[in-house]
Amino acid sequence: MDYIQSVFEAVKKRNAGEPEFHQAVHEVLESLRPVIDKHPEFQEAGLLERLVEPERQIIFRVPWVDDQGKVHVNRGMRVQYNSAIGPYKGGIRFHPSVYIGIIKFLGFEQIFKNSLTGLMMGGAKGGSDFDPKGKSDNEIMRFCQNFMSELFRHISDDIDVPAGDIGVGGREVGFMFGQYKKLTRNFHGVLTGKGLTYGGSLARTEATGFGTVYFCEEMLKGKGTSFDGKTVVVSGSGNVAIYAHQKATQLGGKVVAMSDSNGYIHDPQGVNWDTIRQLKEVERRRIKDYVGIHKHATYTEGCLGIWNVKCDVALPCATQNELDEAGAKALLKNGCIAVAEGANMPSTPEAVKLFIDNKILYGPGKAANAGGVATSGLEMSQNSSRLMWSFEETDSKLHQIMVNIYKQASQAAEEYGTPGNLVNGANIAGFLKVAKAMMAQGVV
Image 1 (cartoon, rainbow, N blue to C red):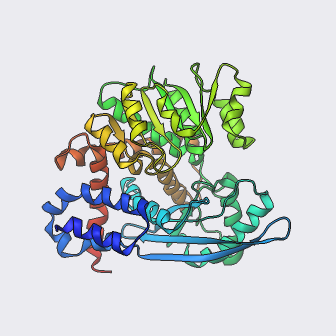
Image 2: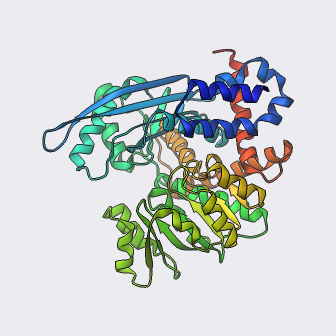
Image 3: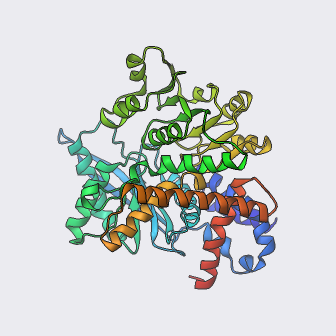
């Protein structure tokens, strides 16, 4: 058994029943084969064994009381994965599917994503199996306050800076920040995604969606084309999807389909951005209500069917493993030329293999959706200097970061023998920076 395989087998044995984590680790380790061949010192230092094991895993109970006075108990967690290049940085996810394997997969991916941004941020992730859907603002506030009553012990602006993720938006960040401030008596920039009145950054709301489209635009440029005149399908209808739609449209694309967990809409005339934003961000309604406003659009139950809609560009922006082999085959059959991931690991390994084997432009999440954490890093910089940049300045920095990420991934893929394979390129480029820092700091 070779070194890479032995490390992966040890991961599976030590982390049984965590398929998402196994999937993420396997993809990275396989990409690193040529790097380990070129740098035997990494094997001698046990670098991969250290890399795949989190520095710290924190699990705690979160009791809270609903509006009827009933006590509930959820599980909270934070995985502080790697701090070689900076303070831990990564989102908090509130969703019934959350368990330690999901958080470890997300935290592991975050190491490389944060490294690619060029900013000083290590990798972490956190969350809870709490479901904010259907809860009142007061119930969510009570949960967030109790969640932070434990988490505050493990974070600070120079140790670990959480952010939002699925189920955690500005409302939840605000409640957690208020509790953190009360408990510590410090106005630290310890959470990102804050409101603009208390240390948030302009362009943070738009950042992940904008960044995904900026990355995709660079892929298209590499083939001598652009978004102009392209038909686009965006899965999801949350924050990332909404702003991916906006930026793709600004660059000349036409978004014809979007989805939520129940189903998807198809609007051949172009999905109306103002309507989607009103329905999902303001009124928090289901996407099927779109067809009641735009009569020419259609709604179909079942969100996975969205990949059957003909498009030039696909932007999966919902959740992990949403784009499977069948979806990938449908995209290829309908002439799709580019896929850029706005979500974390939304494409299954079988789908990714199809994209790469068929030489489709494919931007993996750790590269394509790094705009969110990049702008969180910019928010940290603004908090440290007690300054606030304009939307244009922040967006310009974000755009340049995404251009640089594409260049890093493309160059690394070329250097290590797989030109055009941005999965390998992103993994290698992200890994090398972290690996060199770990080597310099000794066995810690």
